[in-house]
Amino acid sequence: MSLFKNPFDHQSDLSACPCGAHRSLGEHNAELALLQRDQQLQTAADEEKRLTNAVDQAVVRALIPNDITRRRVLHTIGAGTLLAAIEQFFPLATAREAFAQDKGPLEKKDLKVGFIAITCATPIIMAHPMGFYSKHGLNVDVIKTAGWAVIRDKTINKEYDAAHMLSPMPLAITTGTGSNPIPYTMPAVENINGQAITLAMKHKDKRDPKQWKGFKLAVPFDYSMHNYLLRYYLAEHGIDPDTDVQIRAVPPPEMVANLRADNIDGFLAPDPVNQRAVYDGVGFIHLLTKEIWDGHPCCAFAASQEFVTTAPNTYRALLRAIIEATAYATKAENRKQIAEAIAPAAYLNQPVTVVEQVLTGTYADGLGNVKKVPDRIDFAPFPWQSFGIWILTQMKRWGQLKGDVDYQKVAEQVFLATDTQKLMQDVGLTPPSSPYKTFSVMGKPFDPSKPNEYINSFKIKRV
Image (cartoon, rainbow, N blue to C red; front, top):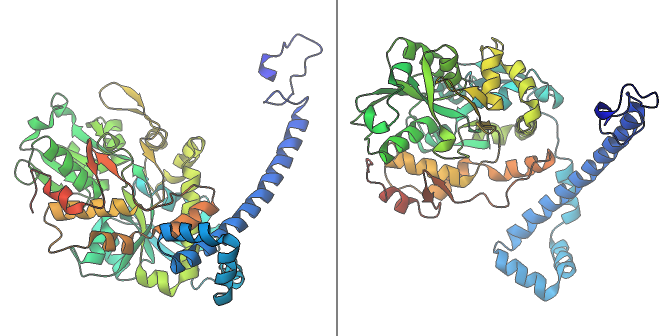
């Protein structure tokens, strides 16, 4: 590398390339251009192959839903024979061509998308100043909104075409929990992790939740991962969240002010609220929520089922823009640039350093420590339907969801994994092959196929 060449040697070329494999920076850039061109050509070929496979998979799954049966058929007659048999009854080539050209005219170009000023909305926000929406022919007005109830009401009333929502909200809207039932969809998770429990500085010696009896704690909304994770955390430490503490809903932009005014003792909140409390010297970060459940979902991109079905091309373009922004946000080297883009008053209205500490994971905890947690917040758009089932179990556990629930049916109706799966492939992300997985929350395994057994296993619950 040029950095290790002797500057006092007349034969040394200090303008050589950064990688040290070329004689000059010009040669380095020329080869890099060739590699990028080849990569673009390969990407186009890969995308065509992915589109073809997507159509073929959909057709074969429709005809032979059971995967074991499909394998047996292929083993018995071979792929060629099965393909020929299908093409006798279904115009597979025509379907492939139609699917590849599914970018039809946009039904609507001018859109309004509501968001709350938190880093969980990063892909939705950054897609505006960084040009991801305009790239797909959309003129999107991202509108900063005061609270989650306002977000919900404005999307239901069609003042917003789509919105940044808490991942439990589309489930609550669809099941009529807290509002009239309206079919809603959640095609993409906006962020995973990215939350924390923050306490007032006067409680820095009360690190054991058993000492929190009588605390007044805030969460952003009743139907939020924040509410369910806080309740879960308290209950696992023997604290009944309905009798031993008070939990109140406070809009994220008002949380730090309430902590400073001593109206609350702490909160489980989205960032940058936690980091702003540290920045202002009024609170410390007790725990990142990834320590409760590493990889948990938080916020989401949501739209009514009516919008999805009446404006499919616009919906697809909007979702594609957000997933492309998400893919960009997954790369650590882009995080500082993103922080600068979303920190201004029109978006988060926060000091850049606060947003950077959240997105990069190098942060002050308010107790004199600087911590490095690169995945303090991360961005993974796939809407695992097992996430949806877990959320529904907590809604049921705490008495929000009444009556019998078909957990799997509701999760599959709302969490649109198939749409996201295809678009993730298009932008170079690797989606999972199945929308279901097991995971653990505070060491307790969750099996999405046994939701009622999971609910019944808890000592503290309202059911």
